[in-house]
Image (cartoon, rainbow, N blue to C red; front, top):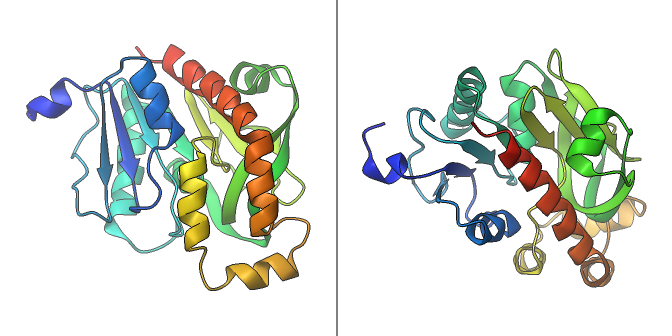
Length: 244
């Protein structure tokens, strides 16, 4: 790459929408003293033509569907495939995980039930699950999605599920795709809850077991945020251990 900014950067973070920034991922990268650059499609920032020279690639979430006909989504998928070819570990958060599934030959579609709020996941105790998610099989993580990767890419290993979403996380070679928002922070939650969308109140009433109301989310943030950050730290450290 010829851009001197990218030449001195360890990690590229692809952001799709203005309100879905790096959150705790950015905090962790700063705490490690790593050099990173985030580019936001909605803000008009142009994704690079190549990820060559980076150590890691992280792809964030957003309210768009991975199946939307948007050039930046297809470009993100192309960069994910190139990262795989170059041996660069990719980490996908929610929409980012869905784009990883599509990029590697999986399928994304809308589920019968959305998931919004602090909800449980369980990993399957495989070697890969314990490496990425730890020995404890159960965790409570933050969710905000209706779509998910319903068919995994060839060769991918499912490592976590939830009652409403059979595919919460998969591993493929050096990569991890997650349906949940492990990068979540109280500030991000506050921003999202300030503008939750017109359909949110109806979803709360229609899906009592998988969509939480504002007070339940606020209470869950107090209870589960520290555990989420501890799990995020483990996931990010495992991702970093795969950098060349």
